[in-house]
Structure formats: C-alpha cells, structure tokens
Image 1 (cartoon, rainbow, N blue to C red):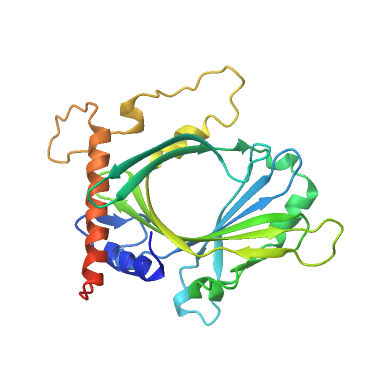
Image 2 (tube, rainbow, N blue to C red; image 1 turned 180 degrees about the vertical axis):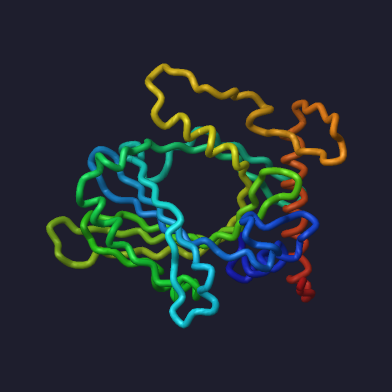
Length: 286
C-alpha cells in the first residue's frame, strides 16, 4: 500500500482510533505509547534448502531518556525453506476483493521447516552472533542503509527488514499490525573476495491481522511424526473464535467468528481509506 507518506498517515490514524484499538503490549497504557518492533530476516544459502534467521528487537524502556539508547532482543528463530525456494511455502492463498474501491484483504497461510538449533552448523551460529542492530539508523528508517550489520560467516542471499507497530482489536484476541518493510537482494560471485552486489528494493507498507492462538496451535506441529494427528480441533470455532460479549454472561458461542473477523477488517479498511482520502483532499487527521 502506498508510500511512506501513507504509512505515516495510517500510523497517526490508528493511534487515534481508541474506539477500535488498544495497545497490544500490556505495558502501554495509550495508543500513543505503542513503540515499534524492528525485525531483520536473513535468507542464507544452503544446498539442503536455504536457511531463514529472524531476529526482532525493541528499544529498552529507558531509551528515550538515555544518551545512549539501546535495543533488547525479543526473539531469534531459525527455520529452513524448501529446496529451491527463497520464501516460505504457501499453503493457503485467498483474496477478498472489494470491487467498489479496488481494495482487498489477502488470507495467507505459509510454512517452513522447523530446526533444532543444537544441530546448526557453526557458521550459522557465528553469523547470528555477529549481527548488530543500529538503533539510530532504525529510527531514521533510512532506505539507503540497513539498520543491521554482520560478518560474512555464511552467504546471505536476501535481507528483509521491517518496522512494526502492534495494536489489539478491541473485544478479541486479534492483533492489527502496521508494518513498513524493505528487501535487499545480494548476488554473490563465485570465487570472488569482493562484496556481493546488492539490489535495494523500494520500501512498502502493509496492514496485517492475525489471532494470537494461531501461532500457538501451529507450533505444536513442529515435531509431529509423519502421519501423526494434531491434538487440537481444526474447526471454524478454533480458527475463528467468536468475540466475548462482556454484557452477556450466558453467551453461547456458535460459528459466527469468521463473519465477526470480516466485520473487523471492514472497520479497519474504512478507517485507513478514509484517512487517505481526507489527507489527499487536504484535510489531515490528527
């Protein structure tokens, strides 16, 4: 969607939507307090299937008052892509298109292979441990320079960087994620000691919605034996749970969760598109 100007407009709009959103982090009390999460995803060449390393950081709580702001690492995950792929394998790919305004919501489920970190080759551990994030560059969101640096213990084919703001949709466990992302693709020359050529893609931004339970359920599949069944129900009630009605103590939940999700998506869409339309017309939403 759009360019950086639209992304900035959408962030301001979401931070003002306290009738629809709450902060995702319980430590934040207002939408204005929502701070970005910075993520770097490395695609690393490997004959058995490219490796994928994803690391996320967040500024420490006292960074705003410190003369030397710092990052704290939130997560570090290794996976392996299917051989010949440079991205996760798509399992579900559905789009709901609004023909009136040419907008669409894309439903996607993708997969990669879980890895036992203890079985990683030393060069991958060395690469991960060498990665350093620069908080000043990350804050500036520079397009000409990545906010991470690393030592070339293994050939990096692509770097995907993103800056994410997380909000909670009220009365549900759905997360709304506003993300700015940019890719860098590296071309390594065989038997060359020169730095690899780098193709820098234009930055883009997106809105994503997901339920907190999806990752929890799918994580249980990481080490299933071939032919084994999962221990959770794969029905509509599980994947698209209904909202909790705090005023109805005798609520009996049915299978209206997907319709409720689509209604939420429509609310988010109207909010963001309205802000774009009013900004385009010269009226800025504060």
